Image (cartoon, rainbow over the protein chains, first blue to last red):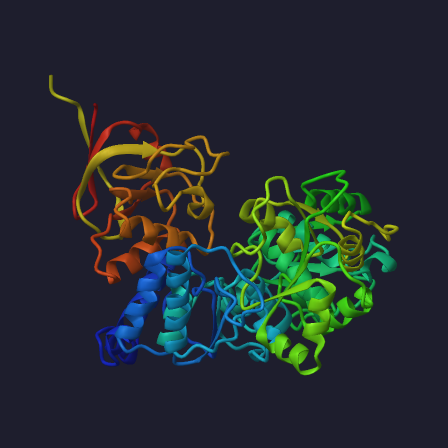
Amino acid sequence: MALTLIDEERAIASGSMGEGAAMAMRIVAETARLMGAPRLLPIASAHIDGALYHGDSGTLFAEKLVEGGASVRVRATLNVGSIDLTGCSKNRLGNHERGMARRMMDAYRRLGCEPSWTCAPYQAGHRPAKGSDVAWGESNAVVFCNSVLGARTNRYGDFLDIACAIAGRAPDYGLHRAENRRARIVFDISGINHAFLASEVAWPILGNLYGRSVGDAVGVVAGAAVHPDEDMLKAFGAASASSGAVGLFHVAGVTPEAPDLATALHGCEPEAIIHVTRDMLEETRRRLSTVGDVSAIDAVAIGSPHLSIAEFDRLETLIAGRHLRVPLYACTGRHVLNVLEEGGRRRKLEDCGVIIVADTCVVVTPILPEKPGAVLMTNSGKFAHYAPGNTGYGVIYGSLAECMESAAAGRPVFMKAAA
Amino acid sequence: MMAAKTALQASILVPGAPACAEALVLTAPISFWGGVNPQTGLIADVRHPEHGVSIRGRILCLPGTIGSSSAAAVLLELVHAGLAPAAIILHEPDAILLLGLIVAREMGHEVPPALQLDKAEFAGFEGRMLSIDADGRMMTEAV
């Protein structure tokens, strides 16, 4: 079906609201045409992943929108940038790159985006209503928005996210349409015991396995012996969206479009059922680590997605005032940093050897020291996936408690496995 | 001796400048982000069969793409740096990748055209000269 634009959209594309808005509308319309969308949809909000520096042309693009007088028509939060503007952490970008990355972050603010600088906007007060259409970028935010909040978004990448925010429109296709939100695959975890599912390591491991198993299909997790909390769903989604192209998952009895299994399946038979076993989870856990027996670690990184205040509460309990032998990088957003500052908690954590990283994270910009053969320990399925390629560090995966004990000891410390 | 010429009609995904160049047919799908170096135009993915080959100025035939939301940024960088292919021929449209061309055009760059053609039709193009006109008509000739 050919794309039809309404009069207002055509007028904006021809410059009725300025050249910046025209450019944004044309980009949205061209994408809609390529995807076979019949029309554009009004959107309620956007989350912009495009302010991360990949090269000069991205900065010039954002500045051209600013020069064209564009501004966002809907609420638009910003994902991480390449620089920690709070000054909590330092990076190793060269002068040219740092300057262009800074200009890029400035340009997105001038377009009217909120300087949230977080990959967990849904824990920083940006929670669109169930059933609303939005244009979100950043794979973990997309999957959380669709799955846990029940709002509707495709995976909006660089350029398209800000173009949608300025146009206030998105192409009507994919996960915006109810029929495409039906689960086709059942991911049955009824064979996995309660103790394991209640543990923090379970959900990133399940998410990694789920992403590799379903690819870009919509699936439903069924038979969960525990009701996962929000941070567990966040970890599951982030891991699934980095190991696969997951945009939406359901958890029967938990997520808003899956009050029960049959509803998630829209009353149809599933196309496949995956029966998850303990062996599959053990194998997945092994895959998350890229190095085996090592006698020392060089750093610990947590906070992908960005840590919530509840996760900092747990971290502080586990540190218990001890001094860490290797640095522990804790990535978070300003919404949490502000709370930590108020209570004097940031200083206490830093005194123990924690390096708070705000506005950005350790796999998107060079913060970790360059060190051949270095080993990073993490409790994040997403960090485990990206750290080897993006930082050069080998990875060991463990629970938050294991990461903490390892940071204190300077070597990997594992506790009794619950699985 | 006259070279044997064949004419084909491809559908235009993104219009661009007419092109005449040697075809480069990739034998495996590629992710532009992480798979092509935006500073050099070389295929950077060490696991890719065409690792180390330059895509600059070639008629790049892609049997498949692995979608990354930053693929468009890499393609825009390549156009901006003068390292883009002369044309891109895709088996299936990939809106995220082609967004790089749409944005490059909005930025005032001359962009290579993107066309759609069944991969069975372009499988034999490797190393041959191809010309593409503004209407998507392609002429291939033996080298």
